[in-house]
Length: 336
Image (cartoon, rainbow, N blue to C red; front, top):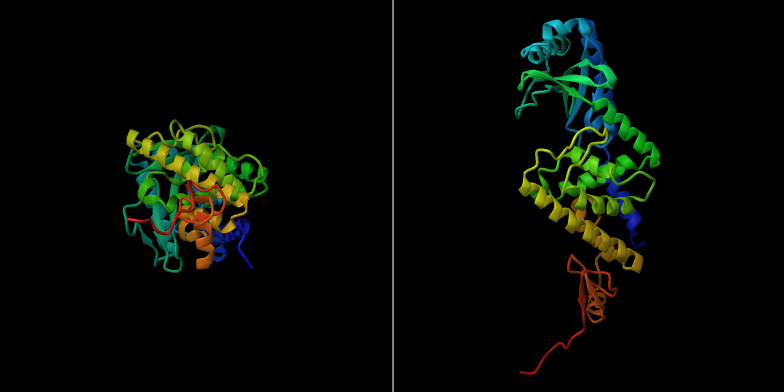
């Protein structure tokens, strides 16, 4: 059976899903850690944050953030510059009592906002983030490197993404993962484009239920213009590109413009009926996450070259005019 673009996107979507067993492990370990820290007497509550909590994380699962909300009576002791590090030391002692085999801050330098815990029975790390409640559903997050506490709207981000996902029939988080995969396939150029930037770009462009292939076209069309200025995260507070240099911003504009052109090309090729050429262009954008186009016979290739059509951005001849470059049949030889 020949491929379809919708079928190829379904395969892409499957390739990006987290392992359900790992997701369950993460949920269960969150519960046991929360109970452990609550038994230690200084924790009021906890919740998951980050792309895992928003369900926009790409496979494989590498780390899970748990925000540990401390009891308000501990603020007086922890409000100073040593407070975040002290809170993390509390976490470390409590966790070590329950899991003597656990390791802390293993590997690359961890974030200043989290104590990294590595368990021998998990293939991913747990990051414990100390926090205090603030008014308005915000929290104060501790940073041991910067030696201060700073406001965070992480709860409102989670809620905004959940609401948008519901409004799109559950497709929003899938489409975020897809655009993240596209960016990851080009991380040699766009390594400065972080996951929250991608989420914010999709949030700024997709607000209704739409097919995944169309969502990617619309997100890239939006992104090519949006990245020239501020990109506001889903909670509506912060520009997530504020640390970009002028060079990075120029690279982002140029690269997203190219991506949008190629996505439109793929969409038009499908509309014209050249499904394999469309899949080939999508594959060039997503890389190994996306299935490759089927092979063609030499006769089909020759026929495409000898028809007034076009050549796609991947160099593939098409009998339709929707590729980037026109092709014209020519003589196989010319006299001297």
